[in-house]
Structure formats: structure tokens, C-alpha cells
Length: 294
Image (cartoon, rainbow, N blue to C red):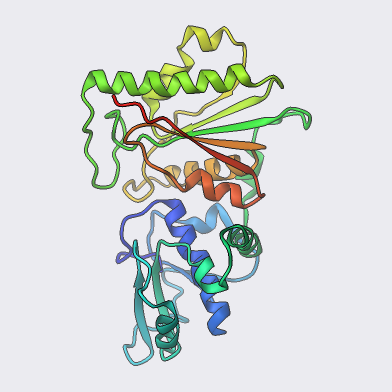
């Protein structure tokens, strides 16, 4: 369920909930649908269905709000204490309205983490494919050129991004120190790369992008950098459809990389965005922890 009762969350939170709902429907042998009743979240325009699963606002004949037939189920931020009991309880409900931002693959499939990653990616690809406009936006890069994705999720730390319920709390000199710390690690990646790869930079901070593109040392390395400053915002907070489109495009671009790094400095978010994009094509994923105190 993606409607006015859905707690604030980004694109990947919703995708985790959707795939969990699909796997849960398989387990219970129920029909599966994605009900969207949020005008500014037309996911179906950018992530297309391989078979009918989307139910849009105004075409909700298959959705019942009769308490005798349907019940809302909230699995948000915390796993059920007893998943076995939860499944037993769900079997008593004719129609389940699932609100979920968690990946339940390991619980539903009783799988290892490695198996769950494969199952999650296969399930997403079984359900969906990316719209042609999203696919065609990917830059034309020769097949022999390696594509490296670098992801940094600053949240509100640098003061140029509105996150959900998080206010900027770094002082100006700490912000500069964090930018320099992250740029320093990025420079190491560039220096260590001997294959003349193309680097994609994904971040929620326009300020960081400007700092990277304006850095004389990075410019002197003569590396191909792809970074876009347009429509950067939290999909759970912004009403512009262009913000959702940008998020889906970034998710797809990351999935097309040969390797993805998540750079996590002090106070930065351990984001699932790049991690789950890598599940789609089994892309190599690494986290670089920068634990220096600012």
C-alpha cells in the first residue's frame, strides 16, 4: 500500500516493501497487487510491470476497505517478534493491506543473506522492468570501459538537503572537514584505478558535487566523471514527479555499474539505496567506512 497512510520513506523503502509483499503473497498463495493512491508518486511511469500488479487511485475495485474483508498490516522499521505467528495470523485475513519498508526475504524464504540477495533481485526483475526513457538515459559507454559507481548519503549534514525529520547539525568547519574527508577517499579510488574507468557520482548533496567538480587535483587526473545536480531531493518529502524520476534513474544507473562503493563518513547514512540497486544484476558492492572524528 502506497497511500496517505504510508509513513515517510524513500524509493528503496517502498521497493523493499513491494518485494516483501510479493514474496509474502507467494507464501500465503494470495493474489498480489501494488495499490498506489499518491498523486505525486507515479512509480508505474518509471518502473513498469511485467504482468498486472499496479492498482491506481480511481481503479480500486479490487481493493476492499470493508473491515470484515481487509485489515491493514504495519511492518515498519521493526521486524515482527514472531514471524511464524504473524504468518498464521495473516492467513485469517481475506485481504491484507501491507505497509512495509523492510526486506523480509530471509524470513519468508528461510534463506541465508547471500541467497536472500539473489532472491530479492530475481523477484524484482520478475515483477518489473525500467521504462525505456530511464534505460535510454544511461550514457553510451564502450563495453570495454569499466563503470564505477560512488554513492554518498550525507542526509542533512551539509545543510543543503532536507531529510525526513533530520536537521543540519554540523558546524560550518565540520561540514568542510567532512567534504574534504570524503573527497580524500574519492581521490584514492581515482588514483588506485588503473583501468581508466568511468566514474558515476551519486549523492544527495549538490554542495559535494560542486566541490568535487571544482577540485583542481581531481580535474588534473583527467577522469570521466558523470554527476547530475538536477532534482536532488527526498522522494518522501517532495511533490515534484521529477524527483521520483531522478531517484529511479539513479537506482537504474547504479545497477548498471560494474562495481559500486558506498562512502560512509562520520554521521553519514548507511544507505540501502546503492546496496539494493546492486542486487538487481549481482553487482559488486563495497562500503568504505571513514571513522575519523570531525
